[in-house]
Image (cartoon, rainbow, N blue to C red):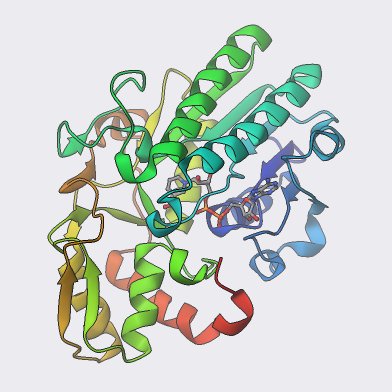
Length: 329
Ligand SMILES: NC(=O)c1ccc[n+]([C@@H]2O[C@H](COP(=O)([O-])OP(=O)(O)OC[C@H]3O[C@@H](n4cnc5c(N)ncnc54)[C@H](O)[C@@H]3O)[C@@H](O)[C@H]2O)c1
C-alpha cells in the first residue's frame, strides 16, 4: 500500500474496525473513520485519534451516507452493521434485516457516484445454513436458509454480498468479501443481556455468578479469533488482491461452551459450578471454518494472539469496562 492512500473504514470505532484502523494508520494510510458510535467508542481510537478523520453519523441516513462517503477513496473497508448476540436476534429478524439493508443500500448507492478502486465488505459465517459440514468451506449463499438463530442478520449479509458483487462488476471495483466466524476482543462494547458469548461469560465468571448457566447443551463447539488478528487478515487479503469470491476468517480448532467457561474460570482463578439450559437456542452442534482458501490466498500467515492470551486480555477488558454506563444494548 502506498503512503497516503485514502481509505474509509465504516464501523471504524468498533471491535474489529478500530484494530483495522490501527493497522492501516501504521501502514501509512490516510484514514477516515465513519461511525455512529452506537457501539463503537472513541477510546478504541485513542492511539490514532490525532492522525485520522472521524465522520460521525448514521449510515442508515442517506444524507449522512452521501456526505460521509461522497468524496474519493482509494479503498473502502465496510464493517458497520447492526449486530448483537443471539439473545437480541430472537423475534427481531425482520428489523435486523431492514436496518442492515438500509446501510447496504446507502453505502453502495453513494459509492456508485465515485467508485473506489478496492472495496472490502464484511459478511459473516451466519450466511451458512445450520446443516452441512462441521468445517464449513466457502459455500455459495443462495442455497437453503441461513442459520436459524441469526436468520435476519444472515439474510442481510447475503444481500450485502450479492449487491456488492453486482456493484463491483458494474463499477470495476476490486471486491474482497470476508466471512468472519466468532471474533472477540477487549474493545468489545458491552451490550447487557444481548452481548456475545465470550464477553458475556467473562463477565458472569468474574462477577462470581455460581452456577454459571450455559445456553443449550453446552457441547456446541465454536472457533474464535481475536479482533486484532481478524483485522490483520482483512488488510492482508485486500493488499493481496483476493477478489475471486468470499473468504472465511476463522479457525478449524473449536472449543465447547462448557470448556470455554472452564478456561475462563481457570484464567480468572475461579471455580464456579457450570450448568446448562437446554431450553435456550444453541445453533449448530459444531461450527468451524474450513480455512483452505485463506491458507491458499495467504500462505504462511500466522495468527498473533493465541486463545489463552486472548482470554487473559478479556479479563483486562472486564476490569476496564463500566458496565453501568454501557447499558443493556
Ligand atoms: N464480532 C463477530 O463475531 C463478527 C462475526 C461475523 C461478522 N462480523 C461483522 O464484522 C463487522 C464488525 O463487527 P464488530 O464485531 O467489530 O462489531 P461492532 O459492533 O464492534 O462494530 C460495528 C461498528 O459499526 C458502527 N455502526 C453500526 N451501525 C452503524 C450505522 N448505521 N452507521 C454508522 N456506524 C454504525 C458501530 O458503532 C460500531 O462501531 C460487522 O459488519 C459484523 O457484522 C462480526
